[in-house]
Image (cartoon, rainbow, N blue to C red):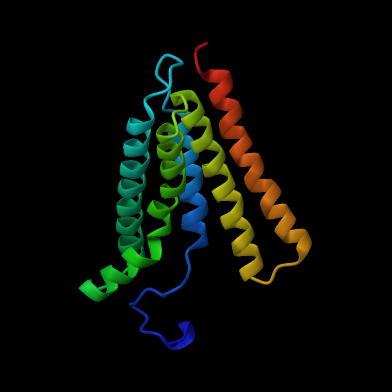
Length: 167
């Protein structure tokens, strides 16, 4: 059913690029905040924190979506649609978590695992923003602006991590 003729109380089925971009930025923020006293947490703990934070924020996003949409009565079908549509918020935490796990599995230090997760999170954020622009059939200029803007947000997180973290 297309969006113009759908039930006004339903949520549209679509790719949620905003959730993926947000989830990637959230993952980068989790990685940036994972150091305690300037010492990164273990790669295993980083994986757990990334995945748990992604899932909790996904659930919070689903809740906010359902509450703010005014859907009444709430049905399992509508709740399922909201869960599927907002899943990219949680899904965005998977690549940096996998990157940290692989870095650790290959014997790299927790510092390297942390920075690997950070780079993957920021790269994911940029990739999702570019995918959104390309899917919207934006001009090359807009695609580049989306990429640069999201890279700037990621660099801001990394910069804050390095400036604020105790040395």
